Length: 217
Image 1 (tube, rainbow, N blue to C red):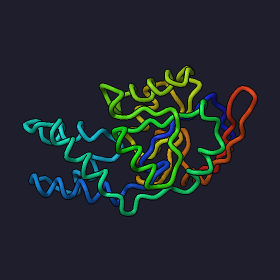
Image 2 (spheres, helix red, strand yellow):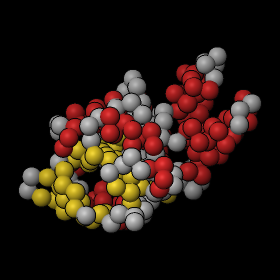
Image 3 (cartoon, rainbow, N blue to C red):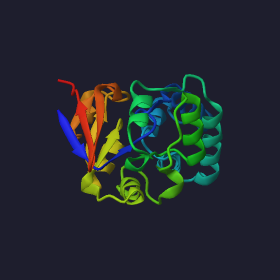
Image 4 (tube, helix red, strand yellow):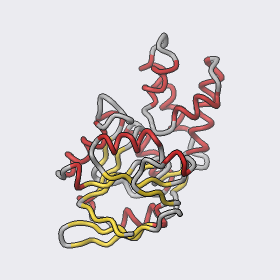
């Protein structure tokens, strides 16, 4: 299957970097400290800004303060944070002006995790610090497209979480989902589902990008 576009917008965690062990440990610890179910908290945390997860479950708490605590814990927890298959290859194959990372992580956390995973830091990045409304709202991906200078319909989003898929589709973009965090059934709203970025071959065209993808059956 060949997909052509002008630019690619990558989520970070679950797409380029495997941070699931760290996310699980941090949110389980935070949940236990505040009397919440660790399983519920971990499930809610994937693909969303931490501050919005905290606001959703604990509107009575100081979300800004708690978010700072969670961010510190996440930056300090580097064990098991690695690059996912195909991540390094695809980032090196793409022209820097043709892609951006659009993540629900804060900028310090995103840079830390990419460093832990040994991935190059790209020049174009939209983080939790750059938007008012995070995923599943479309603002992060619309901001990413504007940063690169392309129309939404000319961009392809690569995501691993239902919240991110919803954000990309609401932004008017095509979405490729990776089955790295959620089962395929929960990713069905994406245009296509792949195992990982290892199932993507990139070709730079004169006026865009061609993605040769190997979808799951």
